Image 1 (cartoon, rainbow, N blue to C red):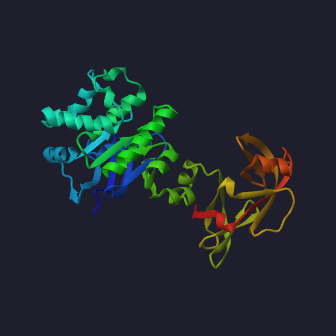
Image 2: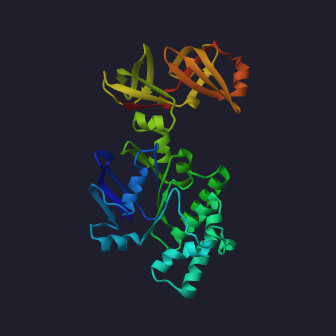
Image 3: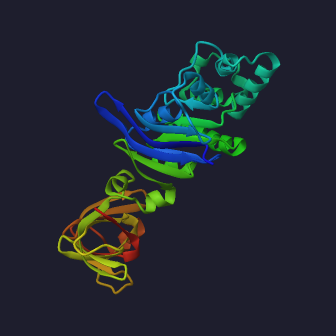
Length: 358
């Protein structure tokens, strides 16, 4: 049974549709990350799932039980969950008192309170910070206090809204490490948002891509990054080569697509005349300076219009009648004698091209 499930959630602020028919479920012990650009509705979705707000339409269920509008029932459900905000607030009090507050609201006192706060402090590496004034902490330390405050009540579900959005790289790495350790040690169910694609890959088993209030794809990181479901997802995850054209032939799952007068072959099953998008990763393009017979079904001649160094790699923009971006090693570039304005051949395997209906 799913721990948390959303069915057809919609939400409006005034005349604006913030969320449009969101359906998803999360299993016990799973980490699910929602990625998407700013303004996509990620934080709003987390607030609805955490029962901080009621959706305009649709339902939220916890352990198979739909959550009603009853304030007492919603409070009972919310006590089983914790939320860490993107910009967490701390009270003007010690670190200990900040972490202890949720327990005090629940009537926990004395030795039990001290033991639970001590455990939470140790969990986030702040054991020696109990008496520190919370307002004097750095951004990374404040986020660790917020994480401890969320964990001290032993929640079944932990919500993290952009947990490292305002932190430096070192603090980000520390918080990510803490989150991973907590997930493993506590068997927590975690639902988070992030605009950092690689962070979603590092922390989550499944990723949902939320764009303009719509959940466009939900799957493993490999499914999202290797087989994006549509053009907006491909653009968001950074696929630079998106070619579009009609299918002119389909032979046993091998399609031929007319892209600006060039015939590109890819795997797929589409009818002749259908317009498709072809997604090609720059690292899947092989570059040579002479025509060579290879196993690649697609070979295009073009001119280098841009050449830039990125560490040990070289990024090439090739004009083949349309623009292709390729990435090769600096050593390969030097051995091939590549230069701006030079002629090259770009080879693409049909198996390296992901085709979807436009």
